[in-house]
Image (cartoon, rainbow, N blue to C red; front, side):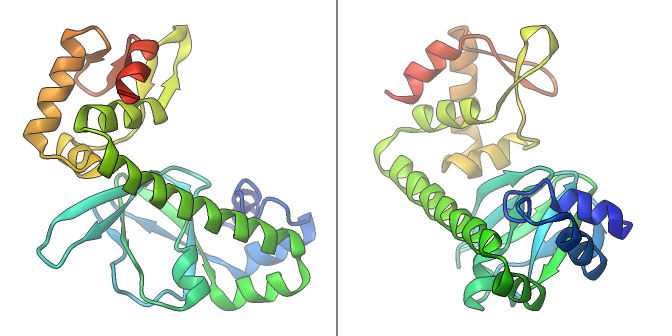
Length: 227
């Protein structure tokens, strides 16, 4: 990516969006971008964390793997989302892997660059703290859901969180995940998730198309998410 394009992309993010044009231009010139093919890892769980990444194009997923090899999908990220803040701040190993779900481009911001900006930009420091707080809340919410909600409620909640309205009022779920990955995201087996999806479809809550999940009854799905 050209430095100007990098600066524009960084300006769309929650962390760097508060920087001035000059600071963005300087950061854009100092950062590098890298392209990834589908299935390629940006980094692995346990790697050293000396930079954070901003998704500029495509889509990635964040996954955690247990010592037994079980995998959970923690999040899917689309353009202008940041990932890797935690390891950059505490200098610990990566707590999760990040892998491209589609051909993707990421902007890599090194820890020294971030620390230098933070020294003279209170806005950046505040945005980074907000980002870290949001991450903690997401982890807490996920843990609470796994304890207190059944699989159907967790799946209904996830579908609503990723609902996007298309032209004509059509509501589609934008996840870019296979049913196996969807199951990993809600803590269930592929077979169990498929049964729940078929149940939702039979009750008229969703419609299962070849490449998309269409939400037909948002209110009904919301009631199921809180059951």
